[in-house]
Amino acid sequence: MSKIISIGTAVPQYSHKQENILAFMQNVFAMGPADKRKLGFLYHQSAIDKRYSVIPDYSCPINEWQFYPQTENLDPFPSLEKRMKCFTENAAPLSVDAIQKCMDGKISKKEITHLITVSCTGMSAPGLDLQVMELLELEGNIYRTSVNFMGCYAAIHALKMADAICKSDRLAKVMIVCTELCTLHFQRESSINSITSSLLFADGSAAALVTHDSFKQKGLRLDSFYSEVISKGKNDMSWELSSSGFLMTLSGYVPELIEEDFNSLVDRATSHAGVERDKINHWCIHPGGKRILDAIQHSLGFNKNEFSNCYQTLKEYGNMSSPTILFVLQRIMDQLREKEEANIFGAAFGPGLTMETFVASANA
Image 1 (tube, rainbow, N blue to C red):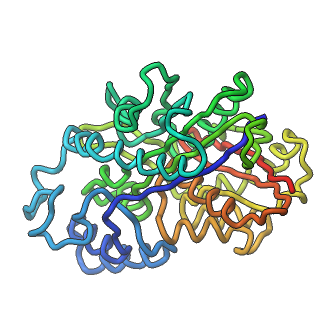
Image 2 (image 1 turned 90 degrees about the horizontal axis):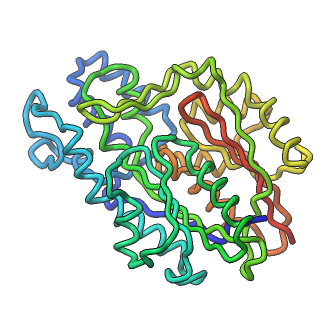
């Protein structure tokens, strides 16, 4: 068995109120009064108060923009090269910030045996894993691997990898770091996909330390993993490269698809874990958006109390893609009482349409 010892999170220095991002995007999309009102309605229904970004422009007047061109037609619009340069400059320091918070009081950096980096918003070779190694001055022979382009469910996939490593090596100390700079990829076309992306996504990083269950420090035991692909939704959620950045597709049917299948998915996942469904007392659901959380609640017959940590994370950070579910899980871990027995069900969704789940527990 393996367990999560700690989670550390980090966000960039620029905090943007949702209303400021709205004003920025209304300008970028060159909208008329009627369309501005429609976009404003969507932003005000998002259940998001603020988001973080490595880009300061979203709260600045046009004459103070640093990343986007200070021109009426936004030409030359940032190229993929400019976006990747910004990722290279910012992703590694943000990752190290999260890792250092995760290690604090738990282990030293010399004890890390494995490093798993996760991202779908930037890629290069040498990449994020080697940058993190250099900044943390990790040993050159450390085991490292990367999970790339899996989207919002990638943190669970990384936990699954760490679990396998720890089961085969009782001395393993696996550091996972998920870092996404989603706001680098906002587009100027006022398509539904561009509007959805600008409405939801944000930047952030989360690190998780996973060890074998025999490690002396207490943690959250990873009991089971279970995943399914809804093939009929493969065209409704996607993430593709383009010359102007990464392009997201998130159709309005995604909440409906998830709502239709989620209740039965929970039954199959808990059965796979050998846990009675009514024993689940904490829900760690990826806050991909308010409509998705509302759809899952409806599918399970819950009210908002069961998903309070999910809604609060969405409110304070938006959807940061892969790190987001670890932000939710950190909240749950912080709230667990010393002698509380807990069974946690986690789930996240991504291109495919892929639904990844886990069951974790804390024993008194």
